[in-house]
Image 1 (tube, rainbow, N blue to C red):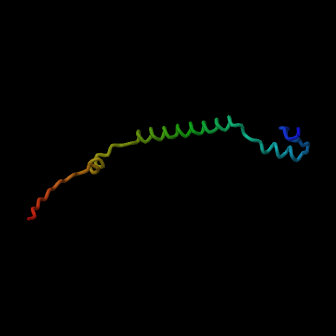
Image 2: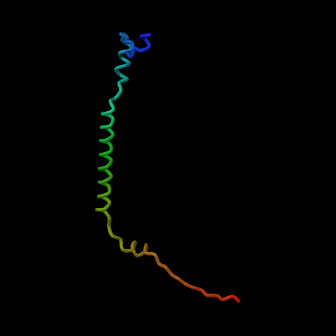
Image 3: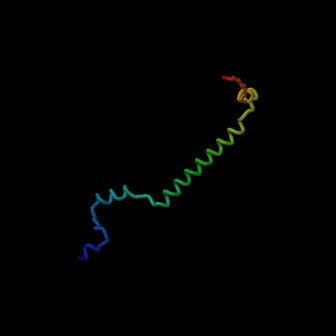
Length: 82
């Protein structure tokens, strides 16, 4: 009955099991979160830098602005049918 309540895993003293456990170490959650936070910060800085560079390199093109203005023509045709 006491064996069911046991929470410890059996320990083996084999050299083979020690080599496998040292290679298969799990990363802590804190280190994974810190890694992704750093990656997100770098991504954010790159996006901000690209936005600033695009604004600085933007040249006003008057021809493009004139072409892009919409032109609206309204015509009304009246026809009476009797």
